Length: 322
Image (tube, rainbow, N blue to C red):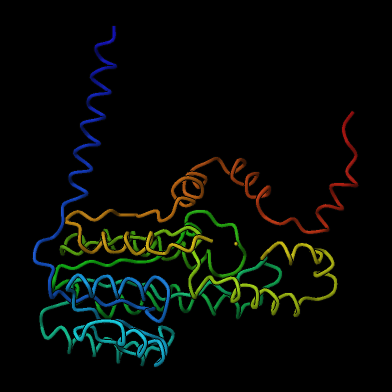
C-alpha cells in the first residue's frame, strides 16, 4: 500500500537533487568575455557591472550621464569601459552598438543585460495623460527591443545570453500607468525571443524583481512624481480619491544584490533559468498571487492598496442585508 507513495517521494527528491546540481553548473572560460549592460548609473546595473568586473568579464557599461560614467570608472578595473546611452534615442543606440562592435573586435557579444528603465509616472489610471504612458513605454519596452535587435548579430555570433529585467508587475498588474504595461511587454518579447533564438544557441532569461530601492524606485522619485500628477488633477478627481489616498501611496527592500545575483547566474550558468523571481516578496507573495484566481488576487490587492475616499463613502451608503 505504501510502495508507490514512497517511490513518488524518492523520485521527487531525486529530481530536486538533479535540478540543484544542474543549476550549479557554470560555463567554463568566462574570463575576458564581453558583456554589455544598460542603465549602469546606479542601482542593479551599477552593482552588476562591478560584480562582473571583479569576475574578469570585459564589461561595457552604458550610462545615461557623464557623472554616472565617471563614478563607475573610478571604482572598477581598467578593463571596464563605459559608453553614454539614451535608450529613447535611436542615434544614441547606434553609437553604443558601434562602440560594442569595436570593443568585441569580431568575437561577438557574450551577454546583453537590458536593465535600463524607469518606474514613473506610476499612479491610478485616471491621474494619467497619454504622454505619461509613452514616457515609460519608450524606455522600458521600445528602447529594450531596439537595442536587442541591433545587437542580435553579435549575440548570435558568440552564442550568447540576453538577460531582460522585467518585474513582478509584468506578471500581476496592480499599479496604473505604463509601468505594468511595459513589463508585460518585456515578458512577452523575451518569451518570443527565447523561442526564436534557441535555434542559434542564444539563451534568454527574465529577471522579475519584487520591490527594491534603486534610483528608479527611490521613495523621493516616486513621491515627487506622485505630487506632480496629484497637482494636475481636476478638483473632482482629487476629491474622489481624497488627501489620505495620496499620503498612503507613499513602499522596499534595500538589498539589491538579491537581484544582481540572479542576473549573474543567468550569465555564468551552463543552464540559465528562464525566469528568476528576485526577493522574498516576489517569490512568496507576488508571483504566487499571479497564479491565483482573479477574484482572490483582486480581493488581496484591494486589501493591500490605498482605497479612494469616494469608494469608502459608497460602501458606507450601501445598506447591509438583514
